[in-house]
Amino acid sequence: MDPSQIAQTALYQEVAERLRQRIFAHELLPGARIDEQALALDYGISRTPLREALKVLASEGLVTLRPRRGCFVTEVSEQDLDDIFPLMAMLEGRCALEATTRAQPEDLARLDALHGQLEQFAESNEIARFFEANQAFHYQIQEMSGNRRLRQVIQDLRKVLKLTRLFSLSIDGRLQQSLVEHAAILAAIKAGDAAGAQAAMHDHILAGRQALARSHVAQELAT
Amino acid sequence: MDPSQIAQTALYQEVAERLRQRIFAHELLPGARIDEQALALDYGISRTPLREALKVLASEGLVTLRPRRGCFVTEVSEQDLDDIFPLMAMLEGRCALEATTRAQPEDLARLDALHGQLEQFAESNEIARFFEANQAFHYQIQEMSGNRRLRQVIQDLRKVLKLTRLFSLSIDGRLQQSLVEHAAILAAIKAGDAAGAQAAMHDHILAGRQALARSHVAQELAT
DNA sequence: TTTCATAATTATGGATACAGTATTATTCGT
DNA sequence: ACGAATAATACTGTATCCATAATTATGAAA
Image (cartoon, rainbow over all chains, first blue to last red; front, side, top):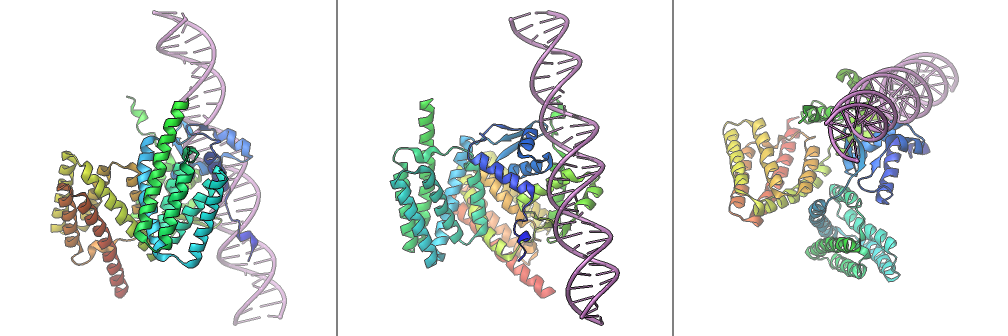
């Protein structure tokens, strides 16, 4: 095992990942312009790998390249959300269905542990950690589905969703409600009720959309 | 209206499109190495825009970039096909469902016309043209669904499928069978039977997978 | 004072040059 | 003669440089 074979990652990939993190952290806000020169100077690299990284992010939909105009963080419209959430509900629902039929004991144990974390972070009202555990819970089910493409499509769409500030969990009572929904999903999977798991996951995602819509209304009222 | 504003396309995009066409035409076979220098020389451009184009194609899954090793046309495994087809069946099924509920008279007329072409090319056994009309028929339904993301996800997956040589239509009787399935989809949409259209489309895609599997067996027997 | 036009500056897109690594071929040793 | 090691070659990855287009600012005219 040559250790040099491990981190064969090219510079443009590292740069792409750094930018992803900054975009997801909302340090770079949607609509913001990404200045190639300034960023290359900031990172201490040349513009070449940076430009390659931006092309990759553009394919992922995280940034929008306007020819001869520059690079901008993509702005996600309400229409996009209305398109993506039902799609996610269908896709993640399918994951839950497949995961139920293929579940191994160790998978269920892992899901149980993640749900335990969810309960814990809901109890202590640690929203950021709840969000993390939530993602891990969903990812675990996607892994269990055994369909790599299905998982990949979901993850690609989730990247776009992460462009928006997801305040839905901050809404009064949503954290608890989300926990209940997760419990229902977990129970159906453990009971071997594939159709039930699919429906529970489907409804869970759509409920997330509803909460997001409400939080947007709340935000606009606040301004 | 300044005509110069129309074709704002960057060089890397043109190059990416040219490469896509060559890959889909199986002029560049899966597993084949793409030599940057040779290709840049061939196209009469520098390596910079070519490399950017390859990054884009890599995000689409058409090529695989192996760090320090080079760029290769992606090889699609049977496992990939087993992952993608059920996914496509679900996604295109959903399209058919949504399209049925949203169908406008002019949409139905266009679908009718496309189906007419299918019948014509099936009659004259023009496989390539049937293939084209088939794509247009499916695309029209995706447009009718009104969900841009749904359409985009389907198109992205279809790109991967187009990497493989799709001999399924060449199979004895498959062209006729495909025509029957399309007729069923069209009839359900025109009847406003959304669930029926969804089921018909779902089964149609899975039948395509079956035919492909049979054609692969036939090919292996032939070698 | 406001608007339009022109010029200048700045940033993007593309080309060329250079460095580092991987692969392959050749040579030496067993 | 065969295998291993080293050297050479070729290609990937990164940096710098140049040209073109877009945006902004300034000046003039209405």
